[in-house]
Length: 592
Image 1 (tube, rainbow, N blue to C red):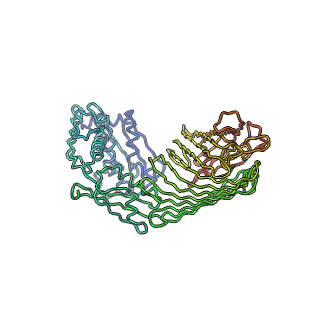
Image 2 (image 1 turned 45 degrees about the vertical axis):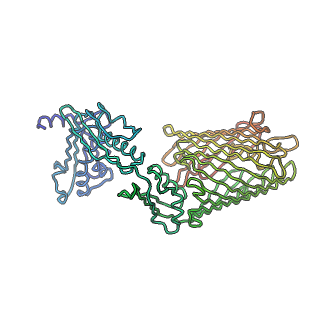
Image 3 (image 1 turned 180 degrees about the vertical axis):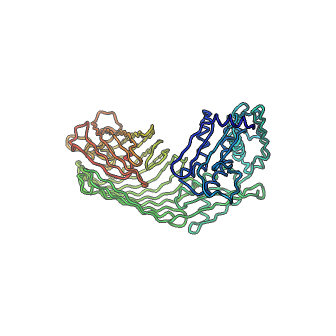
């Protein structure tokens, strides 16, 4: 490049600098209108040293010398192969300074980048390709010849062969020629697929307390099955899902084994098996709620989970009295198959509600299937025994239950979601042995989240239905109420039900709607206006001939590492319930 051309290029450069602490940095490059300048600055280690306030000349020199390759990589990714880069430390070219002869001080760094013209693909060849391979559109004749497009094409071609069972597929030859006069790049990639392989012997390392046979069973990598990289990913997911391991890897052998097999090694790091936690909530009417759990993540040495949950609620509240519950659940993964878990659950619950009291014991044995990463389904067989006293008088219920459940969770962050959907559907058919006839209860909880700017909009739909027995003959624990922190904030707890003329009780149908706008108000704070609406009906499925009520209010969230701390203040806005003017709710986690 002639001196005249260099001078002209420099005069055309847009220059910006940052000063104040440490050394001065000047970044000079044309404004090409495609965010190239921002990408170059973001990739610069020298700029990062400046942002950190570094003054050590040795660190500045090392960063500057590394920047040549980093900046060149950005240019190549944008299809610019004639770029000129100069990095001056107080006027000296950084590349010419010996690494062990750093200057005693650096006052100014000047980074000059002349990107040159954009190259386009003259040829973009790749092959042979596996059936159904989809090469990125960017790797086409006439498109911008970015190095990133070449890498993406190579990765797509290799992954397609691996998905076909060719585990050792690779790019065996690449010919890339830049034709500067035509500003074109010719790229030709040749692949060697290698043979179709099957899974070979699988060994396990790193396990001290977990049985090797159980790890292999949970992973589900069956020797002799055709190689599939997605199956390896699923094996990692299955092992991590148990909670027993803090780290899981599956390593493929470098060499192909006998009979075109691929030996594998599962590496695990075990977690501390025992864990406990607690939670607390408070409502001005519901009173306090305390909950705690104890969990063992490797109960019998086979990654089994054993969990005990306890809860006390209604403390100092106005909800009838204090409620108690205790639950025990045992889960054995990969029983009988890799994506199916066996579970056994036992629970006892004593409720002292405004309109009934009950003591209920339930035992359930069933299976959980992980259909996809987002969808989990569950089926079980159980027995329920409950002694209830309500406005209809004392009654003892004995039921055989068949609980069926499906949970879909596609939220980005379950404890504090900003995007995604969540849905939980439970259908429990029951056979009445005593106290009631045959029937079924259904509940649904659906939630959606969307972030727009600095506001997260959240919506919730709750449904409930009880089919089969009449209202008088149905178990009180299966009926539905509305009002309080879990349904309609601002309304008294369980204040909306069904008045039969001689008794007030829960209904056989329920519809609940909630909406929130979680507005970011600083680094850790959110201001949350909200509105809730609830309906209770005597009919099995809502026909909206019953009563409804609503509440609205304003909340504050303080976001912490364990979840947001919630404070909501709500008031009734519709309905005939005689609620207080304001209700206060405090807890950990979002309302939904």
